[in-house]
Image (cartoon, rainbow, N blue to C red; front, side):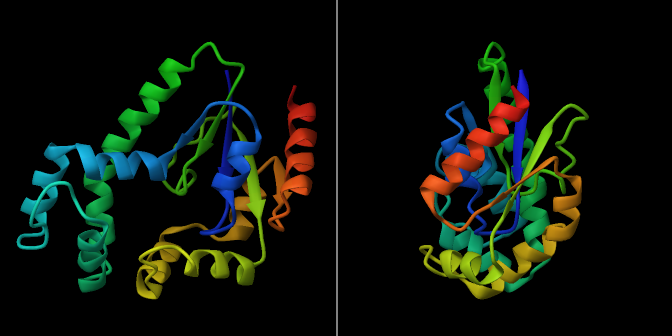
Length: 189
């Protein structure tokens, strides 16, 4: 199985690009959303860690945001609770798709969390900072403080680009993006 990981800044279009490959995709953001809505064990851990911040299950995104706004260090505490569960989901995904030729990994902190293996193919999704920020600002529940805190967790774009075997310049044009994905797949296969 070939593991293709997409890396890039917040709002660079990793999820958009991941869908164009036509292979199974592990989306870490979807995994986190599922954990918040279905995993009571995580709810109780968060409730214990941040007393008074989580009032009922399922976990609401606004409560997570409020905890991060209260103290930017809380994002690391939340990650320590959530990331082991995301890793479990990733392992289930890989096991389920073991016979697939290729899988796509859409994991925002892929390099930062040392999830990369030597044989992984890393694709840097490059987009202009202005375009990325415009896309992020349109998201429901956008908060600039949280955006800045998340950016601090990420390696620089220069570093990610250096660690990548391929670069896709994302100008949010589906036809051009599809062509770039096809070119990469031709080189890999």
